Image (cartoon, rainbow, N blue to C red):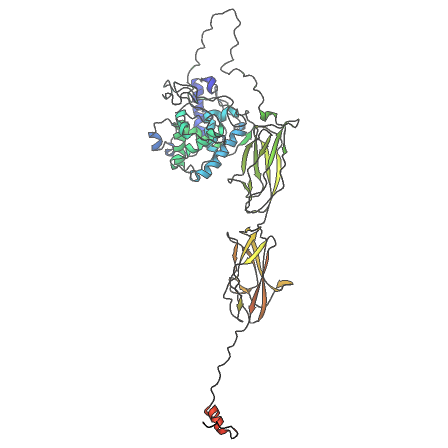
Length: 577
């Protein structure tokens, strides 16, 4: 078992007692909601398992397999050491191997979109990964996030552990008799069968892959509608992973520790914890008797309980990377709200300039910007192909204009990063048109019956959220503000002839406020302009109402035709019949 899961220490009674005091002190200073009495016992009611957790009998994600019990460094000064006091680990414990840390953060981002109500922090995955596998044995993973060798818990044969007979025909754990916890997050095969996820997009759900395992752990912790920002739900979720009060306290301690700050370290350089929940108190077991000599020299046994030093592994592709080079990235410019037409392409090369495939390149957006990669993330990790090129996901501009930087780095190796500058310009329109051709007229001192509405487009497409200005100008050749004629009203009802801060809606439409007229008659001009140079001039007419001609006056009897005719002595008489 020691060969499968890391070294296993057998501590004396004195060491166990001191370690218990360390647990109590750490719980008091770091584990949220956990308090201890003078004997180091947990006393907080809210640290007890939830009813669901106490009645659960499925053994959780790990089958209640053993876990690492090492605690993070204390924030407060430690008591004076006594004989047998374990050496507390230093600030290096805050470091998390690059690929493992990337997997946790990617899982958090995925759950933020898939289950936003869960509020899963990546630091919780880091805390569980620490106690389950020591962050994948200090980050011994390849460029794709798969462990360099399997991480297996002891077989769950009921001998000091739960009894879980084989459920996967040895597919994941290589054991066709009993199940064993597998991988960086220590899933038992029966749980992985339904909880497994593909976190790195290779089409395979592999419990030995830290991306797959971290995403699976995130979904496992977010089931049952739990909100991990609530302490009771957080405790229930952790206890469902491994049903143990000590496990809960240990995970909470690491969660608080990582929340206070952590940093990335190269893969394979992390420390592996030593304390295990299945360590036995008492003297170390008696070593087996020396076998009879066969005449051949016997191999020298490893000192104490330290594992023998393995042979140096062959260099991984990541180990051969000397630098990153641009792979033909074009100028990165986009209008606010648009997707950048070009993508960032970065090439991993050896010192001799040879392309290196199967290397994970991380792209990180930095600077005062709300731009993101497709999917809303500010960090994206992509593996290089056979040509050594990694192409970042498309960038999407936010609403903040100006420049920002995308930095490309190699995951798991310290080589200089490569910076790309991107620019977000203001939303623009190149065409403005009225949505109606109705003439805009008004009488002096009145108000225009119709409001001016325009539509903005850019290269034929709707130009939404484009800034615009409307000004009543003196003439087509003089764009200064006219102090006579039509006007808008401000909030106080006073005349204004320039409106700023206007913006088209989602359909590219802009409807101006109602227009009014003073006593000046004539033809006036309203000019609307937008970012990008689109301009529209609208004609307004103020004229007095037309007067209708008065009706004809009926002739008086004295001037009637008949009267006139008889009165006129010169009038010719009608011819006689």
